[in-house]
Image 1 (cartoon, rainbow, N blue to C red):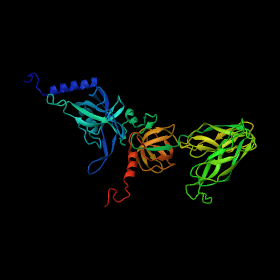
Image 2 (image 1 turned 90 degrees about the vertical axis):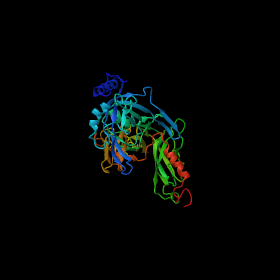
Image 3 (image 1 turned 180 degrees about the vertical axis):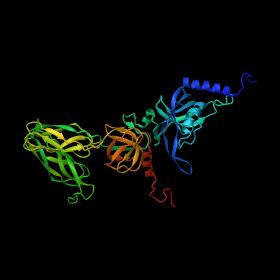
Image 4 (image 1 turned 30 degrees about the vertical axis):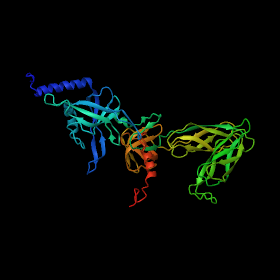
Length: 470
């Protein structure tokens, strides 16, 4: 028979057991954060969740039941790639949840259930710096001791991010949206995102120049040729022994019809030749030849001179350039040099090519590169909303790299326009947009694109019925 000194279910006995359990959880547990899911948009028929967000995080003590490691298979290897399927079982106090978390979330909008933890909510596990999704809540284990249940057992699985908004205000949680290091030394961006290349804060580039004798002053086009589908290489005649052979690059132009060479609208002709290195030690003008590119007919001649600019070296690429800046050579000469700066996709100066190497320089001139016209300011913050100043498009910040001026965003609403300012709602940062990559970034694991491409070669959906006759 039962012990007569226990009432087997009195409130005082149940409260004692609950207090002991709470104390045990505080002693042997770990502090996790509970993130309730808020349902923003659902389908009306089958109630499929279209949009959801997590903007609250509540610390609570939990006991890790599978103390010897993550439960089940930690890694799944299949023909679809490698997937982490870590699972973890956590035990939390029913009383702590009902008296601490429930009152805080019961009046929140878009929360469906506040009386207990619910499937689909998240748990932030600090030791692994990971988010786990609650897959099942067991509320009857242990089974009615003293006629009551005291804990919830949360069976959780590693959360697979799918563009949910995570903006809890807890840095340790919100920074999980940033790229993680890949095994190949690169980064893996999880989830569907857009990559925006922005103009950096304006910093003026700097460069230096050298002076040589017997170098190539100028290369003049005598025949543009045609039919080039790619830029041909420019071959420069070798310098005599002890000299330096020049290096040059071609600049192409489209829309010029030379006989039938450029019938193909994408075909181009050679517009000009820029000098990368003027060389040195030439006693006569070297020959110029165009190699490859799929076209023919292009021809050019060169002129050599003494006291010319041999090579321009960029010492600092600066930032914030959207167009090629003005380059000035200051020094005594008979003919002043002229050059064009090469602007990278990120708004820096990567090289300076000479269109005319000048003549008569006795000392290396001072090279001045004009300042960028960038009005960019500030750094974006993780998870803040950014807005296009012209398009009105909005998105949330996934990651911001101020060194490369790459902004990864998610939850994009609308289409950003090149040249408009991308403005942060919280940071106040503002940067002009250079380019936007709207293609979904690969997460490094899934083989969706390869499977889809192979499927296209098997089934032709241009037919009325690819599976047989109608």
